[in-house]
Amino acid sequence: MGVRRDRPSGRSPPGRPDRPARRRRALDRAARLRQLSEVDQDVIRLAQDPLFPRFLEQITATGGCAHPVHLSGSTATRDVATGEVLHHYDTRTEPGERLSVRCRNRRASVCAPCSRLHAGDTFHLVRAGLVGGKNIPAQVREHPRLFVTLTAPSFGPVHRATTDGERCRPHRNAGTCEHERPANCGATHDPAEAVVGQPLCPGCYDYPAHALWHAHAGQLWDRFTRATRRTLASAVGLTQTRFADHARLSFAKVAEYQKRAAVHVHSVIRLDGPDGLHAPPPAWATPELLTRAVRTAARSVLVRSPYSPAVGELLFRWGTQLDARPLHAFGDTDGLADDAVAAYVAKYVTKDASDTAAGTDYPLLTWDDIDAAPVSPHVRALIRTCWHLGSLPEYEPLRLRPWAHTLGYRGHILTKSRLYSTPYFALRAHRAQYQQRTATGAPDDPEVVTDSRWRYVGSGHSSGAALIAVGIAEDLATNRQVAREEQARPDA
Image 1: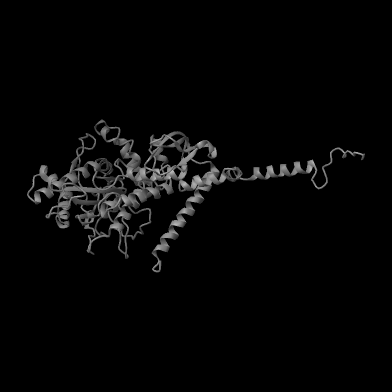
Image 2: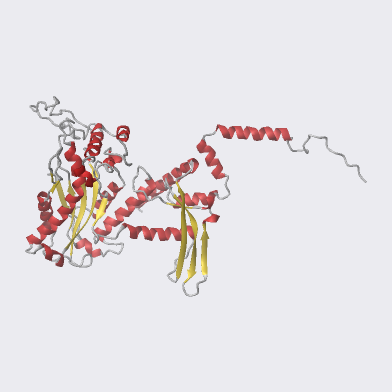
């Protein structure tokens, strides 16, 4: 029998560091981790999770959304005939026991990845109303179609961008206004200069009219569309009530803030047959007739503001600058291209008042919020005007204070008539079904039914997850750009 020899107390087995050395190294690692930023520590924590690959898959599926919505729940797919469960998914197997979905915010300043998705939806929505697709017949491309721009009227002279050495407002004998300010400007302004769009004299500028025009712009657009129908009916000898028996007017419009912080409207206007999309327009429906009707209607409509002892009664019209151009038809090279118009409209949908230095992308709740807002003096004066007018009882229905951050304009950025093209919710529902099948693995079979139970459990990213999401969003954007360049190559 051999003799058992005990190792001396406090010593480690051969080839292994002793316990004090291991403890020192562990303390050194902890100290180094504490020296890292909170973001780096969170990234390391996430990367050490066994479910980290699935976490990356979820963020990639949301396109790198900046403020994802987290859901908890399950889905069960059953055979319609037998009731057999064909597939089951539960978030308890996911990282954090939740599934992340897009926030779907349209504002690029809030979530750039989702705003790009919204712009894509808008592009396809507008384009479908021009050339067909998305359950819209291709015959719509043969209907009379215009791209129309309506502007706001002048509320006072402002500095304007100049080109080719042209001066801003070169009036030699303009003199000064009642506030002793020059009524002219002999400088040349680059479009990026902060002075562009600012009034020559803030004291002379009609801020109440500007704010109230915004508040009535939606009503002015509604009267414009009705006047266009009425003008078309009159031109061909129809009464307004009988116009719908012969033709229908469809449109999609987007609002854009100009440098002077006034909204103007870009719109696609289409003339269809009496049954809408699938009916050809009557023989008298031509782009020329539609152009004349649009111009006549834009000049004729007006809206009166409620009377106020402080402001009086104001009359609102469209500005004198109006552009109405026909769009391409089959075999025609005159006019604007369909895809260019759709892309042009989609670009403005993702912008907000703050993106054009014409307000903020969040509501202003107090007077102090106005002082703290990062806006120009001109925009700040408009916001204060909305706040002041919003306190008057005669303007209470206009809700100027809740919409002071958008300078009194409370319309949707994009609106369309019912029959123009497919709605947003149809595009989103189709994509949501596809993404749900991709995320949960549910089969795509008309003979099955899926029961879902979801519960909201939070939103947003931790600091480390936000950094990872930004990187994924940038990679996806780069991949899309490379793909577009490859498709644009002549030899592709």
